[in-house]
Image 1 (cartoon, rainbow, N blue to C red):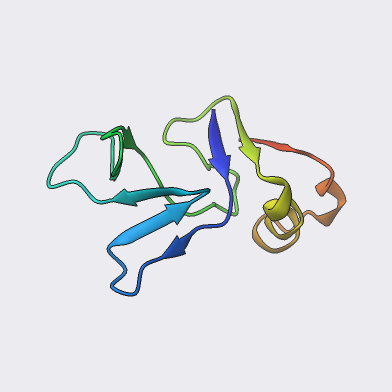
Image 2: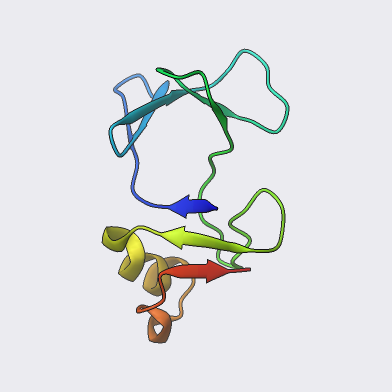
Length: 90
């Protein structure tokens, strides 16, 4: 399942950090745009979408980190009535 949460970037913008993990863009990759630097695992990381298409492929849910849930539903999806939902479904 995908995740929606807060990330930070290094000063150069080349490294993305999420929950203690660091990711960098690979030299090349198919269906992966970032690699976790410690393990080498490939991931697809992108910004959240207003239409709820927050996955690489449609279908299924995307978990929302507790600290990002309110902002996601209010500012991205513009559906504040859904703030209690911990999973976004496209």
